[in-house]
Length: 116
Picture 1 (cartoon, one colour):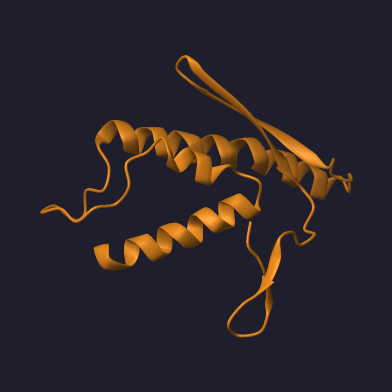
Picture 2: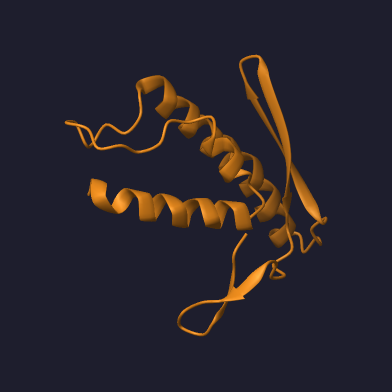
């Protein structure tokens, strides 16, 4: 439902930020959700293609590296590089491999959570 989209978007952004993906800064480059007569069409075809391209690059760049490290029992470096080449725009980010908590706070339920 469109009414739950902002909450889901916020949760997804927080998760991606926590994983080292600069989703919050990317958000500035994309149109946000807004109530429209066509609630199931959140983005234009071009915007949707850009978002899917970024997610594909993230998955297909990181997955083989993580699988190879696991299968060969190779320790991971502190970060894994990820290069996004989108037309003339190129962006290089480093994805941290540590599962150490960072920027933690106590949630309403009393558990410690990462806040990005």
